[in-house]
Image (tube, rainbow, N blue to C red; front, side, top):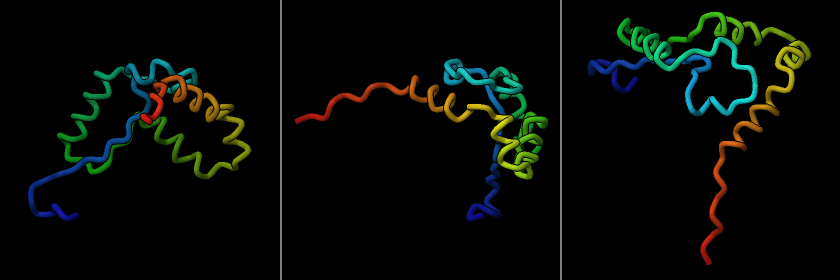
Amino acid sequence: MHLRGTGVRATTICPGFVRMPMTETNKFHMPQLMTAEYAARRMLGAIAAGKKVYNFPWRLHLLVKLSRWLPDRVLIWAMGDYEAEAQQAVAARQKPQPPPLP
């Protein structure tokens, strides 16, 4: 908003799951997992087209939007133990912290 009229443009990009070193350790299902090259092409296309917001892939975006209207018990059933699996993946990537200096 503060840059309006300055020629600066911004695009908010919300990709799905992208295959990269950070996601290789994930043990949970990542629907519509895409390569980094494919994701980059889609992002650059959205920026070149001047889109303000770009969500992709569209099926995953639609699923996320629809999930807002589903009852919690349906989401819990559909997601399974996703939260616990995600927390385990994050913990596996965290490096041990050195002890504080005296």
